[in-house]
Image 1 (cartoon, one colour):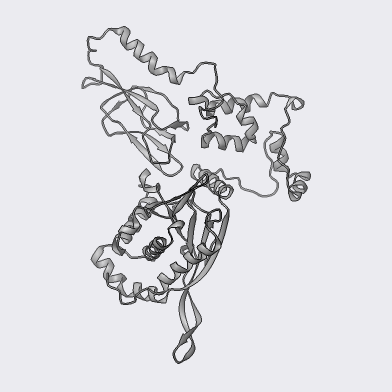
Image 2: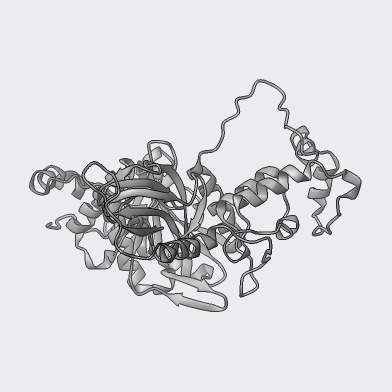
Length: 447
């Protein structure tokens, strides 16, 4: 009989931790190899964690809703049991050795009273769960930095911040230390001078009272993460948005002509999204700076063109699965990838790797009837393109016989980009290149 450690699995190149959503097993339960033990969630996707062996759950080291670093032991499984689930005879190993091993394993999860306030590099890390609690409880970053952390490398855990919130209510207001705040703008001063009831209640740490006929809806976990990502992106990148108008008549007529034959042959519907992705990929090859990221004062140009496609979920939230190496796929391959990822997203079947590694993002706001949009950059990328609804409009066309008015299929395209490294000239040039690819679509193209 031996103990096997099950660790928090690696879920993608940029993911360093995950939240435990639900335990499917409890201590003493039998588990088979590859049987799901728990559900976990990252800021990108939810996943199931299977057992790596047959055995019995010996110890569960973290509770639901706790945030756990990747590679940390989360559960111990006792192997070597009989058919009826009772322990098999233990090998002839001195008992003292087993006790010593058990103590060593438990030490990281029972920290001493000595706290470390920062990591080895001097920068303190806070999990999304801790930051969400701090925001909802009105805890400033100055106060957050003073909370002793009992987690790994002195991190503040959920237990630490909840204890701080509980103790704070017992502190007299005249003993609370005043922290210097940044100089607000004139508008902010005016707003601060007449606080709303909600703000006043929050500052007094009392329940907020809302007037009028209102409905209070608690954000779900994904909406909280989306909210944080969007505000972080605005704070990180200098957003600029450029617009262009595309005549996509040839593209619309071609798709209408071949869509039935394509579906019959490939078993897939061909939407406009793979056509847009193809145009984006061709333009990125001409202007590779749009497929990059910023690291301090360095620009990292990504040679792998991995295109993220914003996808709406049944809950109303959005997720961005990624088409890996899109430049190596033909139109049929792009179509299969787009449909496969979209279906997996809507059915909750995305894998962690399906949402990582994106270098450029496309969002189709026209799906919901919008004619244009100003999307927010998906960090750490530097650009995101939005395509609006395709509408028929009368347009002036230049012909050898003179100008004529004709009904054309028109679409607005917008590009939000990071002005730290992409100037208006490059951003607009790239956007026009995408439009030219769409406008010059070969109406007699074979697929």
